[in-house]
Length: 411
Ligand code: HGY
Ligand code: MN
Ligand code: MN
Image (cartoon, protein in one colour):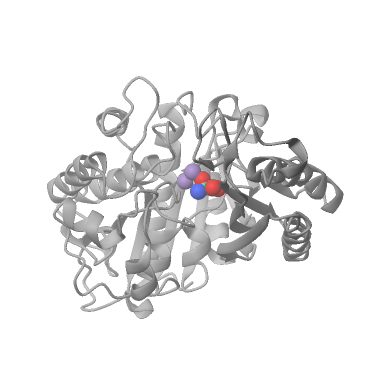
């Protein structure tokens, strides 16, 4: 059985509409009005495909197809449905759409699995609204405690709980999902890089995922008049921040070829053209494929920041998240490869430089990922694009591997 190209395309286009920045990419922040519209759409599709819909106390959405084994652990398939600001229509969302299509294929064939099948749409993987990222999967599995989840606030000081209640979600009884209720986790995701397109291959079987650390740095100086304050009497937070940020690429390059460091978010206070900056808050995203390089780079970044702690400038470093590099489940990787060969779909093995919910799930259950190509290697931007025919190939593989895992295959 083939995945339905029109259904996949329709879901992608319908979900693309739920954005706060129409015409300028997809901006769908967690617990926003756009989240609520996408949430309702996803739940409608889950119901249409015969799934029993539920939401946990963090806002993750589940659609369950019961298996013949009562109370057996589920094969979870899906991804996240939040986006970065002005992002693309495929990052995360495509993984949810493809999982919905797998459920539709089960329904079309009137399949009752032995183990339950669950489609999952997770919140706040990007960290676009609340700190850190991978929040839905970390909260679902207790890596982020319910207390720490409740304490998270966005830049306007709105807490996760307030934001949930604002769109009618019930944050009560927010508690982790028992790990023994999950048999395996599968995620299809866009590659977000150039490799598959350059190789002219539609499927990447992900072997490992990058380790990453996210810092939030606060530089505190002294506001002052831009015209009357002599240069030798200034405590300019932005100058100090600029010296630090300018040093980060050198730290990455000197650490290793696979080490990358990015400052993607920066807030300036009070942000007046004739006011010496009092405070700067900025992000530092540090990644590498080997843990030793991640740790080395983190230490060097922290030392670089502390070197600016002088002359009336003070610095503070908050570590929002640290997750070591992950190797994905060998059995599932082999199932993806064998199935690709059976369906005569060329594939290659890949390492992921992007972080994914699968790196959280993989600490608790057998987890696997497949990638499909990104046009021009672009992602986290409105130009993000993947051909539907590649989603059809990925869905066909995901459907077959999901069927095997909801039967007797042990992982
Ligand atoms: O940042 C990442 O790698 C992912 O897109 N959240
Ligand atoms: Mn993603
Ligand atoms: Mn992303």
